[in-house]
Image 1 (spheres, rainbow, N blue to C red):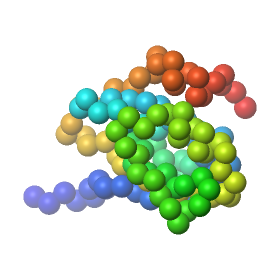
Image 2 (cartoon, rainbow, N blue to C red):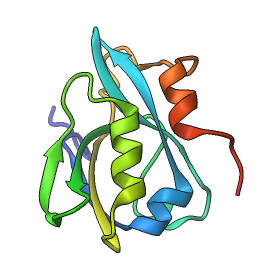
Image 3 (cartoon, rainbow, N blue to C red):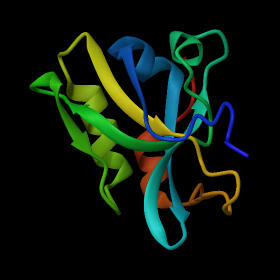
Length: 128
């Protein structure tokens, strides 16, 4: 029968940049041989969580850190995590648009690259 309650397809979320910086962690992963970026962790009780961001979601697009929410960059295969982290860090925009997609439950889950140097360098020591 039809898929009732099927939420697949990108979700567009407008989030305060401050909340995105403090409450969401991204990670590189591989999905069917493609390099992707996934949501790795979301702080409980944060605006990000209330807006529906969840670990395991795939990052599809991110608003331009200079031009703001009118211009959204698609995340391409092998977009570097550092590029994403830098964009979020340097933007002067008060809000950021991110698009995420839930992983397809009928497919193998993305495989995180948690031990990659790129990831550790981008995220740095955890805290605060």
